[in-house]
Figure 1 (cartoon, rainbow, N blue to C red):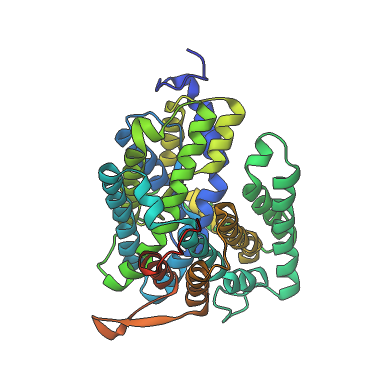
Figure 2 (figure 1 turned 60 degrees about the vertical axis):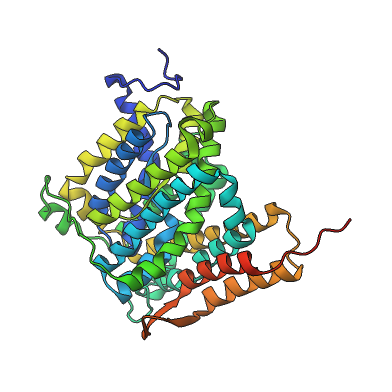
Length: 417
């Protein structure tokens, strides 16, 4: 059977293809834990384990790889700063359960239910808020400061050299890269910034030399925190819609209708269980990777077992202590340059969602929904909850809930005859 087969066929010779798929995903996979303070080795483990769980749920039908979701960067950073990592993980685990609930609603009501509750006029501005809310963090890091701007880590002029190098190379790779290079722009940008950092003497390999080759990932377990749950779960609205688009994309690439078989309800279930599993071990939420879908299209390797190999390689690397120690040597400004583009790109995805919907944004109902979601979210509005005055709902969580409620209660304009 050729490598272009869409049937699951686990073969030793596909190991190299699987390793290549992980290489394509690697830059984005480790970027989320590097930016949020989570453990990179745990993220590698949960990406591999989550993909294997997804394959079990979907019966090995879909050639996708699941790894760290960018949509949750903002709430993770806020959550870690506000409640700490264990409480934030509780919210992330609940977000995975939100996917699971959605999968059962789809099973009962059909995919039309998603478009009714979460139309583009809601999901578009929510995605924009996710990108915009942490714009100051990206700028602080790109200029050599900590994420909150409270301390200087690298002199500003040096930091700008690093951040703008990583940013420029990432943009150039995405615009002019050919073949595999076009699929790994983030990895290219980080690599270029890192090389400049070494040249400027900002990198020390002492920690890498001291780290063991084999080490247990630093697994962290959730602690119950209702406030974190209420803050983070609404964020799952955006990646839930994105999941549907990703499954349509891989269906188009592979020439199969994965929305029908194994069914979007099962792919959503697999994604949700993988996200909850990751959070229960200390990893970031999982999502299907569009860059891996691009790699599948490039090499025409549709056998889902290739993703099994990618998962196995990720899990093996997770137990290499030197991997995490090496990634920790990347200077903050290098990551800041990537974040400037990343958060801007997320904001543009939200704008594009609105534009492609074809809705009249000046129509009073649409204007009210979009305006309130963006201003409540970016402006930092928060409201007390029934639990206590100190227990407040704000940020992305408030913006997402507000959007869903407004969409359900505001009257729709009468259709012209």
